[in-house]
Length: 302
Image (cartoon, rainbow, N blue to C red; front, side, top):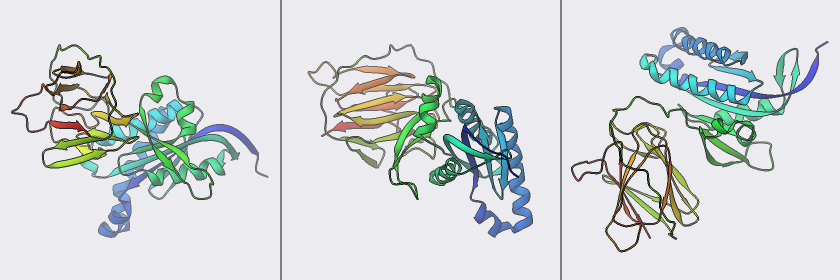
C-alpha cells in the first residue's frame, strides 16, 4: 500500500519549447537525441540546487523543492546555461507553484502539481512564470528577481491567480561602458498616459500597465543596441506617474526636455535603482544620450 503524506513544497515544471515542430521536422529518433542533452542539463541543475527530479515526461521534467528560493535559482540557472550554449538551438519554459502537496511513495500529486503544470503552459520560450504563492515564500533577494505579470484564470479555479515573471537575465554579457554620473532624485507629478517612441515604433503605456525594455526577445519594447541588456529596465505607469526601474549592466541615461519645472533640463544616470517622473525626455540604454545615437527611446505624457 502506498504511503500518503502531505508537505509544503514548490513544484517546478520545465518544458522544452518547440519540440512538437522538432519531432515533425527531424523524426522521432533524431528529435529525441536532440532533446536528451536538455533534459540531462536541467536535471543536473535541479540537483545542484537541492531539488529532486520526480519524473521525465517526454520533453518535460517535473521537480520538487522544499525551498522556493532554491527552486527559483534552479529555474534561473537553467535559462542562463541554455543562453550561454546556443548550439543546441532550442529554448525552455518554466513554471512554479508552491503549496501543501500530497505525496505518495515520494511522488507529489494533486492540486499543487496541477497548478504548476498550468503555470508552465503560460510561459513563452525562455520565460519563467511563478504563482503568488511562490512569490510570497521567497526571500527579499528572491523577490527582487521577479516582476508582477498579470492575474490569470486557471482552469478549474474560481478566482484568478496572481502570476509573476522571474527576471533571470540580469547579469548578461553586454558591451560595458564607464560612467560617474550621480543617481537621480525626482519629485512626482500627475500624468495620464505615457507614449514611447523607438525608431519607427510607437508604444502607449496605459495607467496600471508596465513593460520590459531591453534587447531580449521577452521584452515588449526591444532595443537593438549592444550596450542594452537583454532585460534592461521595467517601465510602469502607476498612479499617474512613470516609474522606471533599471536592472541593467550598464545603466540607463536620461535627459528630460527643456522647461520651467524642477524636473526639466535634467541629465541623469540610473543603475539598479528606481526613478519616478512626469516630464518628457529621452532614454539611452547603456551609453550617454547623444543625438548621434539611433537607439534613443523618446517618452512623453498626455
